[in-house]
Structure formats: structure tokens, C-alpha cells
Amino acid sequence: MRGHRQIIGNKSTDEFRTPTVVCSARRPKVVKGLYYKANKIKTPEEWDKTSAIVPCGSSDLTLRKTLAHHHALLGNTPLQFAGLERYTQPETMQKSRTINTALGARPFVPVPRVQLQFQRNLQDVRITRTGKPLVKVQGGRSSIGGHTATVFGATGFLGRYIVNKLARQGCTVVIPYREEMAKRHLKVTGDLGRVVFMEYDLRNTQSIEESVRHSDVVYNLVGRQYPTKNFSYEDVHVDGVERIADAVAKYDVDRFIHVSSYNANRDSPSEYFATKAWGEEIVRKIYPETTIVRPAPMFGFEDNLLHKLAKMGNVFTSNHMQERYWPVHAIDVGSALERMLHDDSTAGQTFELYGPKNYSTAEIAELVDSEIIKKRRHINVPKALLKPFAHYVNKALWWHTLSADEVEREFLDQVIDPTAKTFKDLGMEETADLANLTFHYLQGYRSASYYDLPPSTERERQEDKRYLHVLDDQ
View (cartoon, rainbow, N blue to C red):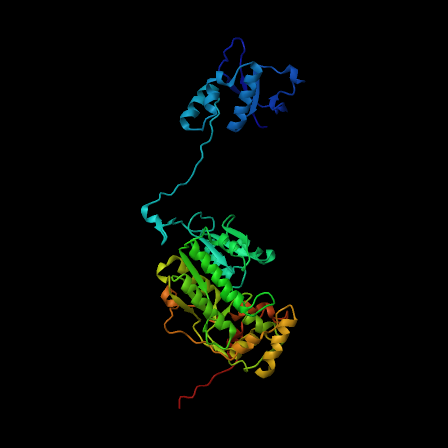
């Protein structure tokens, strides 16, 4: 049974005798915040004003309250007790010795707090372009310090990868959002308090400024693959980008990283590519040190490339799936965006991020069919018919099917800008190839009969071992 301490005092004179702490093995009951022995005292009136009992191992706050109440019963003031006055002051080891002497034979010793402190040196402090000091942190999910980053468009496909990489190293990430349910998966990307959500509207300048005013780096990932009833391409890629760039320039944010698109060209027949190039010109005019990133079509979980082909029962195209591009892994793009934050030499530069191998849509569709072990029909519709049909269907339905601009983009191959920097300029020599990760992202589309089969490349190797190959040297 838990022991208890009994403080014994005497009120023979105006002075209070130094109390002595003894132990009692009986479990006390509480009356008016104090303790008494249940087997001897029946009512509070029978309380012996010369004794009080407190539990052994009690906190210093409990002991201090008990002593103060005990003095009140004796008619003394707390100032008449030499140890109590010092006990109300901050605990130090020197004051603890005074308390221990006053408490007697079994003193109550407060346990000092043990804190691990890392010595900071001058090289741990980094001064940003605007003169803001940043303290380097050890890194890790629970680190406190480092950068404060605002990520516009974090609820999209690419956003989760960069938010996770920033939050797990101790950065404070501000996430502007429009819909409450669209941002909930980002709550677990960082430790408590590292991910901060702020509701905003792309047409509301004040909400945008509130999101960037405390940050030293801003990422803009906002973009639309298709127009909607509320937002056109120009509303998002031009007007919205201009408001964000104005807010960044107004509060003199250290770094601004703007994610555009491959094939960004003002003269492009695709409105998507044309407005992306228009947005690049605006941000460079407002904030010349903007880092522009042009990623190729990205693949990963919940992408718009592999999953789009895997979900469709019938694939409708206009160019016989002959569009060619260098698909890039979304995780590699997220790692590149993270490295740009710590490399000031990337300011004012343009990066083209693309994968190691060139594919056509038909080749990717063949990989998808072999991994999900399902054959889908491909139907080619002339552009003159499919483009106007997609235009009116996209306006009539409230869910996305196919837009006219997506049909136009099927006829445009990816063109690499030779003057732009790439992954190698960021120290990333090797990037993931789409063919090596198709099984990883598409296994869920298999039926139950084939779910546990190995990837298609492994099945081909196993099938090849069943045959004897005769090599003719002649």
C-alpha cells in the first residue's frame, strides 16, 4: 500500500515549530483538501490541528498547498514559515536545500527537469536573401525550426509529395485549401503543429496574402487539366498566378517556386500549354527570381496517366495513341522541389523534369494491359468529331469525362527545352523508369483470380525458362 507523509506541528507559541515528515502506511481520505486517518478521526471537527498527512511522492504543488492550509488552521501566515516563502519562488537547487532543511528528516526533494540541449554554433545560422535568420535543425518529423513554406495546390496529385518531404524535416507547412474534405489526408504528413491549414479563395487577394505573409518560401502547384464552369484556364493559370506572385512580392518572400508544365508555349494550339506559358511570363515579370519547374506527365498513386488507362473499359482517342513523352515519377519531382529550397543557385532558373525513357501512349497502354491482365478495346475517333463532342459533354455533365483541349494535346509530342536545367543539375543522376513501377501502382486493378501473380516481366522470365534455346553459331 502506498505510504503517506505526516507533518507534525505545534501551536504552543506564535512561532511555528519546524515540521517533521514521517510516513504512515494507512490510506487517507480527503476532507477540505487535506487528509486524515480514517480509523481515528470521524469528523472534520476532530481534526488534530497539529498534524497533516500528505502522500509520499506527492508533487511540490500538493505539498505547498497542504502546508499553507495547515498554517491557516494554526493561525499562522505563510510568511511566518521560513521555507514556504522560498517555496513559492522558482525551483532551483539552492532553494531546494532550504526547503529540505525545513522539512526535516524525510525531506521532499523536487526532481529537476532533465533536458537535452544541443550546442549551437555560428554555422548553424543561415541568413536568407531578405536578411531573415534561419536556424538549421537536425531534421526529423518532430524537429522545430527551419523554413516556413506555403504550398498552394497542395491538395492535388503532386502536392502530397512535397508537403510530406517538407513536414518530415521540421518545416512549418502552410496549406491553403478550398474544400474541407480535400485536405484531410495531409494532416498526417507532419507532426502536430507542423502542418497549418488556411482556407482561401483564388479570387480573394486578402486570403492569399494571409497565407504567404509569414513564409520564407512559396510553392505554387495550382493548375487545371480541364476547364470547369467556375474556373477557366485563364482564371487559374494567369489571373490566379498573378495574385499569388503579387502577394509574394509584397511581403518580399525569399523564394518562389512556380510549377508550370512541359510544352509551355504562348503559340501552342492547346489553351492549356498557352496559358501555362503566359503564367510563366507574368511571374518572371513580377518576381524575377522565380524558379520555374516544367514537369513531364507524372505517374504515381492517383495519377492521370496510368490510372486513367487502367480504369477505362474502352479507350477513345483521336491520334491512335501516338503522342510521345518522357513520363516522370512524382516522387522524383517532389525530391527535386525539396532540393530547390536548400539551393539558392536555383533562383531565377528554369527546370525541365522528365523521365529517363521516351514512351508513346500506345506503349504505356500495352504495359497497363499486361499488368492488370485485362484487354481493353481501343476506339479511334476522328478529331473533327471527338473534339466538339468533348466540348459540349464537358459543359453538360458536372463530372469530368473528356475536354476538347485534352483531345488537342493528343497531337502534341513533348518538346524538351535544351536551355533548361534538369535533374542532373540538382544532383539527381538516376530517376525511376515507368516500366519498373507499373506493377506497383496497378496491382489493385487486377481481378481476384490474378491478384497474387508476379509482375509481367517476372512472368515472362518464368515462361522463358520452360523452353530450351538452341544457339546456332554458324
